[in-house]
Amino acid sequence: MAPKRPAGADAFPKLPVEPSDTRQSEEGALYAALDLGTNSCRMLIARPRGNQFQVIDSFSKPVQLGLGLEASGRLSRSSMARTVHALQVCRRKLEQHRVRNMRLVATEACRRARNSRDFLRTIRRETGLPVEIIDAEEEARLAVISCAPLVSQMTETLMVVDIGGGSTELVWIDLEDVAPKERPRAIMRLSDGFANPLPGGARVVDWISVPLGVATLRDQFADVEDDQGRFALMSWYFEEMLADFAPYADGSPDEGFQIIGTSGTVTTVAASHLGLRRYDRTKVDGLEMTTEQIDRVIHSYLALGPDGRRSDPRIGRERHALIMSGAAILQTLMRVWPTSRLSVADRGLREGLLYAQMVRDGVLTPDGVNGVA
Image 1 (tube, rainbow, N blue to C red):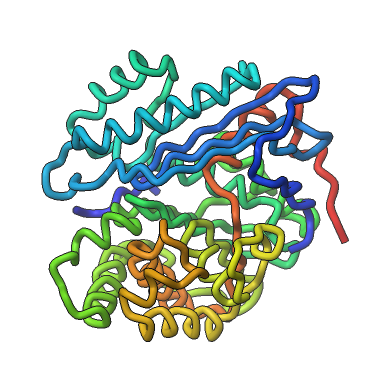
Image 2 (cartoon, rainbow, N blue to C red):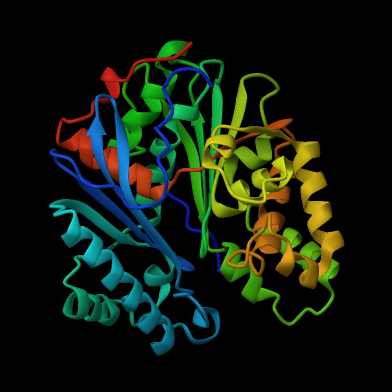
């Protein structure tokens, strides 16, 4: 399947990191963002705090919605049942906190499945939740604006990579015409769309949604028994899907180039590099990793083999089956654009949804966010 293509760290404070357990809601408007992906159902509930937001409650559950989708083109009954159960938990959390401002979205698995419309009607009937399917461009745009706080003032060319369960979004952005202190804010203003950039604003040179993520790429080569051979094939296949991405042919700029990676794969590799036996977002979000450090972690995963990865506490039980397909995507990207560093983002679609809602309602403004030294 060909990729979908359209025509044609210094400035923001980081989002405050809150523990994942439930907090007692205080007075003030709450916002919710739910991301129903190919592999996971994840939700954040937050309130605006000045020019940032504070996470009040969160939920994450691997539902494997896209399991079997490659072969059948449909969402299976068991996958839909698991997902509805997770969404019922989300509904209870929304009711508990009396959330009225929310955006609940589904991505690649529902975009591709022939029975996704019927599934959305089932969700509405069983949970009452207004889940909507968003297109690939909006998914990419939301991932980009969520990473705005990590954009360096020194960045002239930016690539944001979002490795999902069913697809991988890459967005190539030119910031040369933007004043250095305004570069993170310019990324936030892309929430209105990639086309027709403002004078002196961020310009999206190109973007692509590759219909391969950690789950779908794994499924493509599930019949290959040799672990290292499977990894090599996944890397080759993903690189083939990038052949028509315009910046690919141009290579990467020598100076002022930044790659920000957002996904469970990227944060797991970062946590493994740090040797974290228990995940700590405060140590991972915003971390910079060199290509050599990334390669060293991936080689250690290969050396472990499937059984070793299954029991490795750095990887976790929920990710061990997906980590090598994600690592194949990540290593391919770092090889294609041979920059020496990757900025790690523990943020993504949910944070982008929260930002967009709060900016729309005027409770958080891109221009009002203060820089940090």
